Length: 349
Image (tube, rainbow, N blue to C red; front, side, top):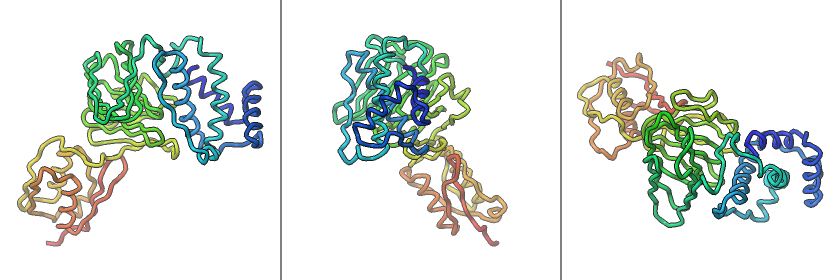
């Protein structure tokens, strides 16, 4: 089964237009649970069900097609299974499970996500308490956190270098413009040509991507354009630059939005000693050092000068903005698109 076929089956299920065989299975499940047959799942929960189902499909296909032991599944408590969403997931998985038995013998070349075969794919799971460093055949390095798992093609063959992540890892990807590097989580697809970034994708939590250097393309896994790259991004995706991140949860689906990382790193060292210099010059130095856009009213700051020195290398961007704001009686706040809004009423001569 391809993900596109899965999406069609799920959409029919959610829309109440299941085919006769699919509907019979749902009714069978419904009778077993003693629930009405024609329950309606709220649209706001469609993505949650879809993500959970597709993750389970991958586990089922891995178990059936590979000799590699399947990823250990979580067994929800009784109270969790009483939640309406999870009971709908159970019903949907019953439908999909039967469909898999029919379509597994078919070829997987047309699938919009990487196929899983015993010959082509390698699975590594960090069962220890320390990070593990993996070096892939293309020279890319992956720092895998404890409790995390990575699947990858042994030779990273094909037009795309594809890996799957469950958990957390820091990637240092070898540059290859002709073969983009794709990281799949259960909710996101991250594409790079060669750079370093961190991905978090723990079960039941938000999927996060944070960039250390270079450019990274991120899009939702559902309906992803796998031909997209940071040079030619997908229409529905976003481009992340250093010190930027994105977080997404199927529980509260919304368009992808850039944010600043929690502690932006200095990208371009600057001199942070200012003697009676315009405040705008201080803000510009911070912008250049951290690669972040700071929005301010130039007209209000035109008469503002300051003498200030930032000494500690351990001082963060926010520490420095705090000092500057206190000196001026100003303030700052996060703004859209990973920017910072600096508020000031100006200075009197």
